[in-house]
Image (cartoon, rainbow, N blue to C red; front, side):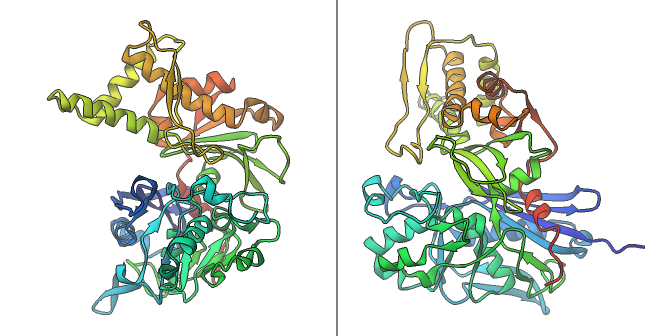
Length: 463
């Protein structure tokens, strides 16, 4: 009888942690768990800062894994990890501890005193005028606010003493991998390194000379490993997973979501959750004549051609919260689920209107100072149904401006595969996708980044 061999997949996202146990033979998910991290904390930069508490994120990881069936966990022989890209956390020494009971590791805890907060991809402290003072990266990719290197360069200028307190930096998912493998020096995948800025994807190297020239502490940069390779091994048995289990280097949640979803390279994948991304796979970097598209490292030396908008489900969620607040001020409390249900029902029956909404509530990386606005308001389109439909249309129209359908046609894309709760639960958005791109939108059984992380480490052998 063949010994069972499963993979633990983990996705450490912007708002939640998701984990699963994946059977690489049957390609089935045998179990899964998720938990909201509730990790946001106030920033000294006000609304321009965006920080999260890493111990709360680590606690959510423990919560999820500990609730997976033990009879499955003991057959896990590889661990794949992915998570929110661009962000940065700093730490010194080993900023974690193992909590043991009778010689068995029950959980890992992050030591808050030995680390910074996580500065996330949503952090906007790096204003255009600051970014313009920075040297140009030796890369086809730019460096934007919220990117790890940009945030560290901002600290170098405004809080240099803070940087001197730490010896390591990486993404939060890299921190979790370092914790599980008990690494002295963190490692980072080419996918996450590319999301930091100042990384050359073709040479697979940091721009250390450029960064050193402006006195950036390059000793803080993690070591680079190709996505899908091992970062180390589990140093202690953990929730029944055997000691010595290989742990893959942490990857980007976007790439893992794509590998979980993509069925053929004639598919485009549209993900709308907190933000929004439309992506297709390419063999190489090419000039598409569009500065709103990026080529990000994927797997097997391929690239993702991506339009990554900062405005997605977060904009619609803000609209819903605004309506809730208005009703509360009139003395009525309406649950969020009821607001969503009503809006989608109204939007499905709404006719087209001439209202034009710019949904750029969070700006965009290529135009960070842009704001949301509404034009052509008149008596015929002020009904809630018209406003909601116009808002959904505007989000897809914005994505279409970033990656026009002609690029998908040139890539011989036959359909768009949908992904993310922001899209799967909203039929009004789905109709807008088919309208703007003139392609069928379908949902497959994939789309889970935790599952993608498990798929991506299938080839890892014992380290």
